[in-house]
Image 1: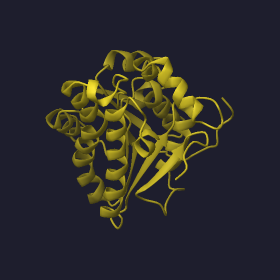
Image 2: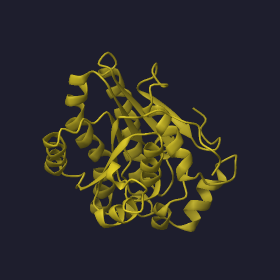
Image 3: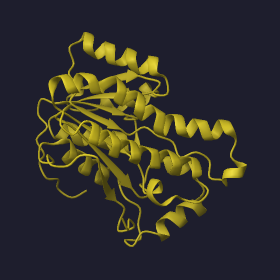
Length: 253
């Protein structure tokens, strides 16, 4: 990884969903390097705790087990932070699953709902729970991780594409609703990124996605994390409700 530009997030606290591994882990690491404190919301607290303990200053990271598909679970996590007087200024909705690669008519109702609930409804849960306190302080950044699939629609991934299209629409709508509040809302739309989520899809599907990328390679988690860090900073001040592509040239709009 090349040398990184310094981004100042000192004194800020970020909640990162799905921060145990993959893009989420890379985002946590990048925010920490920028001076932020991080709260990881994930079901796999063992994996998150394992690598957090290896950090030079693990006290800067808090790990909470949260079922993001449950409004009650998210609300309890927020209450725990408020009890400890933790003020969240950055929210990164990263948690998600790809689902099984198959045509829509072969997808079961349960498989469809599972993807929609974690990839889209969970974003609603987190935003609904954390926005009021951010509005009260008149500042904050919300960064939602969508996908190029939400723009173009990937074949054999209708559930994932629909969910990520929903995240893009939510971001645009919410950005307008909060435009004068001091809270900014952004969305990142990556192409295929090299993470464990690729284990959920077929090699044929991966090859299809890479073939659509002019740079002819998959992206790396740290590349997404660097964009997220900038969006979380005060350097990104006159933008809200926007979608930022990180697709190796694939995106056409």
